[in-house]
Length: 249
Image (cartoon, rainbow, N blue to C red; front, top):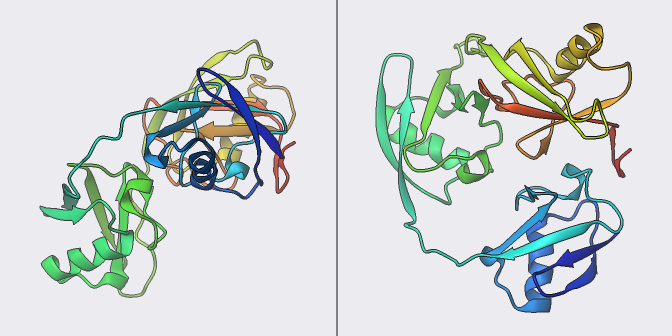
């Protein structure tokens, strides 16, 4: 699809694929304008497009969409950072590289604590670090973040953290209920589908197909709020529509 890249002084069009990552689009812009990738911030309607996601994660980006390009100064930062690793009865600080993956973090924990890697399940802010190859920063982990370690029992069944009650705000789009703000309470083990059915059963939303977004990411109907990293006080955005391989329907 063809989208417009808009700067303070002009705009130009480029072709992007639905499975093309934001980082790849930034590299195209670097080739055209010479602006280094780390200096680029791409936004649509005030939402920043994150490097680790692709166009399928942003149904608001369609043919002809205008993507705003802001240039930021590149600030050097140390390659190391301190995080806290917390078990049920103990915790310790550990130094990691900003480019460490979930797998390399598990290896460092094993070296320090002797905990078998296969028994570890790591969580940050209620969200499981479920992909070993992903970089820690992709999960939002920064200096002094706390990583919680749950141990799988020896029978290999999964040890889950206790459920919590969350106070949430559901914000509708301007075309849906005139941009209503809806406060709700849900268990973090509830799925997005549960949330959708609750809003419909209470007649807050009419019966229709809906798309929920949390922190600029499309939420999956079958996955829990905890899986999506939803925290107490977070805001979820709801739009009419569904997600298909071709985008926002």
